[in-house]
Length: 328
Image (cartoon, rainbow, N blue to C red; front, top):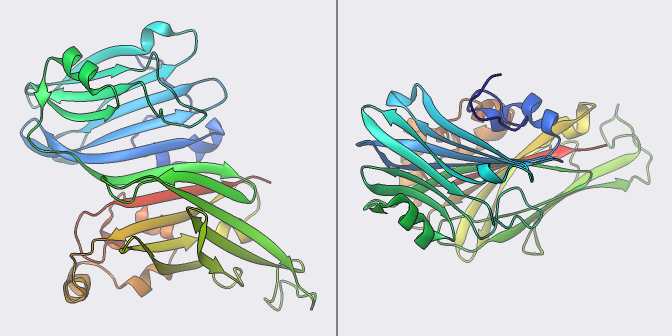
């Protein structure tokens, strides 16, 4: 693939990079994709910010949704240690006769071993003399560089997709709403020896072991699934500081498909202001019931990129997608 700016191998040509298993396994490392909704060029559009990390480099990709969501305008940058001049810069493109600018400064960015930076950076998207999206802690520097004012409409985080790798334990940190704090999420798959020596045929165990799964938030076990070979797809509700979060999982490929395969976990906050009656009425008209979401693989429900199938209220609340790749 040819591109005026060389891009990391973990980025493919389309914007489905986070859902493409081939792209992820080629990189062998982490990919994080955050999708924001805000006003750009007089219309509400999606802005996708993607980070990747492999053994040699970090990569950044910023794309803005085009007219009617049909096309994207993308800026891609690779951050190799010896490419100092690419760690800061800008790019301009036109959307419906409007100039859109992307500015970045990553020369002093602190990654601390993670896929996306923690501090000392900014990534800004500007249009109509407004900064419509600003990421990072160097906000004053960003406004000075862009010469633009803050937008009147704050962007909203629609979804976050993250690919993580591990053998039995998978760890990440995430927020469940924009003004919340970071929570540590640990997913661990265990195997307990069966005293009865079951086998695959009778379904009691897998090769004499019974798989279990634990999901921990901030060190507390919030979900413990026993007999995972029977319950490889499911969902449960948990609560964090009075916020209800619906957790879905699909670990079928971990258990029954050989080779490098991923499980999918979805964390969906349910806003406390949403009443149960409105959930049930809107669910019946625009979305399937929650119980039906576990009857088919989660990957097939989310492959289209739509969050509606996992949204009992039909609104645009945040969803966290974790693709956990199990290494042998």
